[in-house]
Every structure is written in C-alpha cells, then in structure tokens.
Image 1: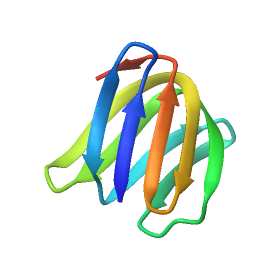
Image 2: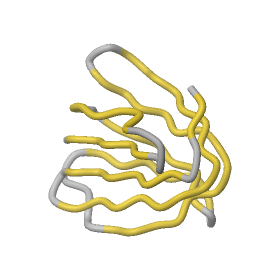
Image 3: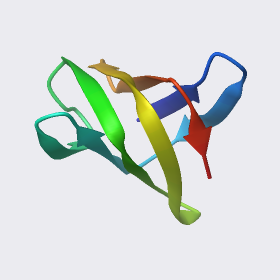
Image 4: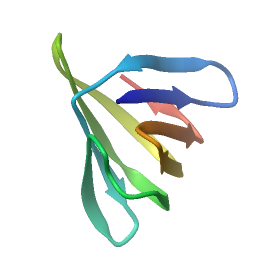
Length: 81
C-alpha cells in the first residue's frame, strides 16, 4: 500500500508501507492493506508508519487523511519527525 504525507511546505513521506496508524478526531485508527475507502480528520498526535524499514513516527498538528484503492494520502497542517 502506498502512503504520501504532505504539508503546505513540502512532501514529508512517500513510499510503500505495511500499515499506518493515525490520531483520528474520534480516536486512533489503523489502516492495513485493502482497507475500505475513508476520509477522516486528524487531531494533534502521532502517526506511526510500519514499512520494510521498521517503524517511523511523525507528529502531526491536525489535517485530513484519505484512503482509496490501497493509497493513503495525508494532508497535514504541520509535521515534525
């Protein structure tokens, strides 16, 4: 599954991942391969990305995530690694 994390300033992450966990406004949720389509708002919190290289973490300051056809797009207001 392909994940792209973008802020207004730059592209923060782009690549293949096994799973991703997000801080949704109504609680944390995880996206795995072949996940149902969804759009959700994100609150301030930590995104965990699991790939072949292990886990990576990004601190997000709000935004939106879209999941569609094994592609995850995160439009974040700000990210710190």
